[in-house]
Image (cartoon, rainbow, N blue to C red; front, side, top):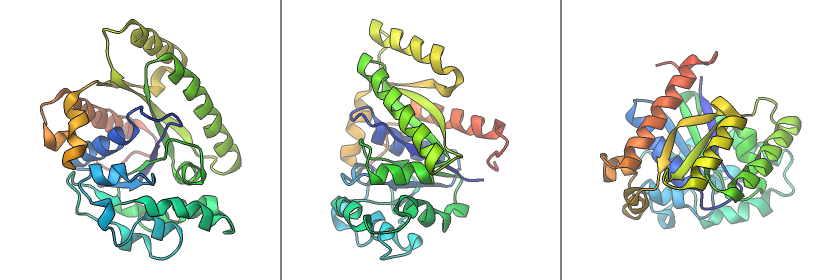
Length: 262
């Protein structure tokens, strides 16, 4: 059974897109069938996957607005071995165009229903704000992965996000749950980092992934080459960490009632 995971945080600069691209590549490296959906008009996940957002003939915008079928917009021409439903600046117009549409919150869910049987994982890179695109991601998802830095303001942000998840679950997607909290840009030498990490573990327990993503220059460099860290420098701490996260996610799924086929 497919896992549809929205990688989201209403706070920007937490490593959301980096996590989505690198987790997709790492899951693909473990022989899982992966689709990454870029739902951010900035198109950074698309570029990070080695696809030129400026040269797209079809994108997730065309899918959400009903111009093309989902499969027509998916490309396999990525650097990371996963399929991609790409995005670019055209996506900013989708919110306006969807205003008069009935059940507009379900457009992405309906689109993914057509292709989800082809995949083990679908990862959705959400915008760093609460808008109709983010709502579509949360309605389509079975779980939410929350990347966050271990700093004071991040704790406030995660509280707001938890509230959003609860509202979506109550009104639009009863099966939605927090899949896991991912600590990014982690520096164990920083006292505040350790303190916030301890608070997260105390409060959220097993929802916090054991894997932490360190601050890593190679992770920061890889997107400019259109590559996930695994292909840019497979021995870098960043690449190794995302491979470990993929392994942890696979193990969790194997232990759940709706386990992925291996």
